Length: 618
Image (cartoon, rainbow, N blue to C red; front, side, top):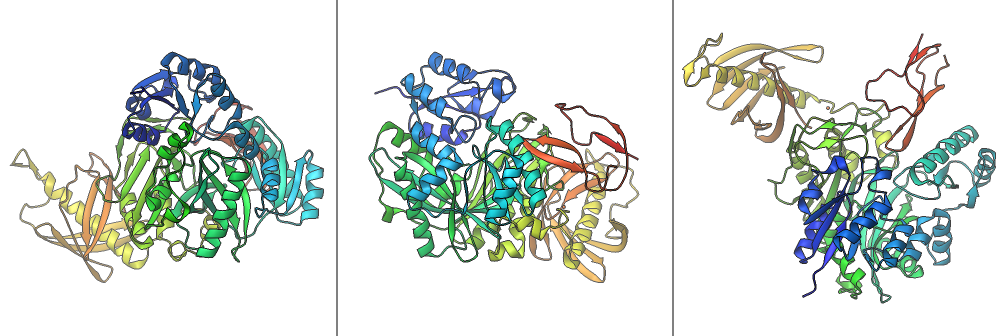
């Protein structure tokens, strides 16, 4: 039998798992700081390709080509990012006789440029957004074009994706500012500062079609993914299928996606992204010529392993399925778990070491695709995504209930993470009803995200749980190696009066105990709380008035203080003071009040951390 070996990029455990099932050996590349990464340990072989900065490692084509030669790899799966849509890399592989697990270079080139791809889509009979098809060269030219199209407009980079180099403008001044920032981001992220302008579709949904095409002229659409929950044009929560599409619209979108794939002789897995308005009119946005981060939810509802299909297609095999064979079985939800602070612009990157990490794989119908483990470092060099958390069920309600449980059972310590925001999104009435657009987050949280807002019942639940947890901890502290310790609480005592503080309010509570059940009188109500009270575990499963709740014990101090997680919580005014680039996204920092600049504590190009003092005002 032929010995087969596939070369894998960073953070692509999905590919390694599929290769194992297919009997294919794998080689992982890594930077020096990733030498102990999960994908390195999973692969059969691993090669270091340089230091941490991406330009010296994961984007270093010379080093990667040397690694391919030295290991004798016969194929390369490029993963989700980095060189996955780089035509030069694909060409260099072809010149070496190494198979690229992806589309041919002409398709990468055609779809990698937003201007060219829009022209091709229009010629292929795909609905496109009204706009300017050429390259915009100056800010004043951008203003004139925007006025001709009519506000609002979207200014975006011609090359690249991932929400970088994109700005919405509602007037001339915002167009000038958007042109400046978008061109700078485009140059930083893609080495290409060209921009285009098109009509911004108000209240849009972002819905994408997964396509699969072979080298023999056959192509399929594998239904849709709803990706409307976004922040800064980057996806946060996705689901398949969409609550919004009817069968006729789904088919029309799927057929147009296949038309485009065939127009560029596409072969591999790819994604055609559309914007859909409130009347179900849909417009071509872009085509991603790679495996999407959110591909697992398509796998859940179709039963297809997309990585396996990509490898088969790259080898030259024809598709095994016909369009009528593609099902929609059940519902799947994906939450992107990031090392981010959701209380700052819905998520600014957080760095640190994962001091404790436990995925909720004890639950059924839960899939976690991650590239980290306990002890891993989340650094400034790479995307702060921790994992893709996927749940599925026979119905959307089942998938959402499972997601709520999975988020509550996910233990992440050492970095700030966005699970509080994810939990609020998937339990929000608007999301549950399917009333979502790409404006969901700023509309639901116009002043920013501030955590879970307690209603009367949930406030009473939290107070009762805190009181019960406090008493359970005190009772446990009475015994040490089976001997009574000195304690202010008598061993046989069964009733306590406490004062519990929540925010600025004080609440008098009365607690009685029977076995593992505590009855708490609080705020003119009675709450029963029961559980095993294992304070050594980060997870604290409780039953509160008959409802199962998973709390987390975030910390327990020597003083007895316990922190728990419950339900996942002049310069002239507005003048720009400085611009900060985080994960290649540029953020304008403006003055909150009229003042003078007293001192500046940073320099252009300098790396700054969360909480650093940048500019002082007086």
